[in-house]
Image (cartoon, rainbow, N blue to C red):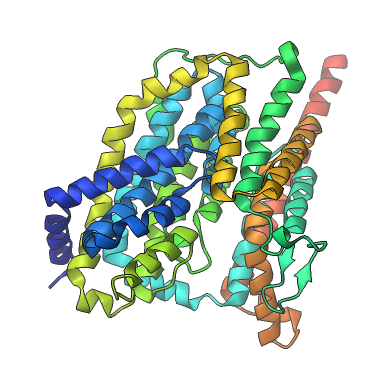
Length: 505
């Protein structure tokens, strides 16, 4: 049978009333939990795993898929409205989306996120069905040095894309990389920078840092300004729906985000974070309105949100075809497979095709459910911005604290939340970008692991990092991504100085 026939069979299975109910429950729960700071789809799936023991395998996995997609989208709501990412892959959305919301354009920001998630999820799910074997072959070509070069590219694009100064971006990145080496060494098993504190042996929790740096830091910054804060929040300015200009500026970003997010999500060392950061950097370079970035550019919401959702489907490629989980949620879904005696891999498509294709088809249905569920609620969500500022930020502190306690009930974790919150406040005061710190913490361990593997294979020969054509090309792109913005900024300063001199004359 052809792939198309298998997909039609899967749609027939997923369209059964009971499976539609499972998908609806999963999407609803995923969206509801995704908006809570600190609790993402991975924790939700983990909490629901024991509940699904009595369900049939197809139904439980369809529910898991709905939770996965719902959680990926749900994080964008608080990112846009409250500058509080529900998970690490929603960090980029907060950068432009929250600026739009504060200018009264929270409705278009939420709409472009919802529609972009739908478009990307639809295309990426079809790609999962039709070109998954080819993506896996490409991913298998990547060795440690290629993955390390990909991480370097992500580091450089993040550092140069966020903030007005590449030096400050790199400084923030290295702060995050310093935090990433805390805990047990992945290769030698030695303790590093744990200072005898058992809670640090597992490293610093990414969710705790992200919530602290964005939510707590933002709250402290607003509180420190008091009534002197020059920025005013306008809940609704104009329509809560997207205008014709918004559509014209978003649709290309949706497609580019999908193209970037899906293959990176399918790579065994990929993930939604890399795709969203690269998508943001791409949109900033290609935009006809680069001056709007940092002030509420709709492309900066559309592209990363599309990349985020596309990577969710991409993550299922190595899980279903190789049995290789590349994210925390995929690892828990792997446990869900194994509780029924199923082992994901190439043989699963032969031994249990109805389950696999039903799962893939349910992603299409979950995507449509997400759009139908969230678009009518746009007008309701933006009303959150009408809450008085003291109540609003007190609520952010409450939810950030409850989210941290829910994810890791520890007094030490709450202390870390407060500490990183103060760090986020200090960085805002001195104009350092926040996102590179979190990126360094997320990707630092992966980059270190791949670098050390590459050097171990080459017996310490550093030149091996550029002997691979793919790795060399990625490193060249990284160098260009760092140098070109410096040249453009220097040229811009020169033009400003020449204009000032001309005006004085």
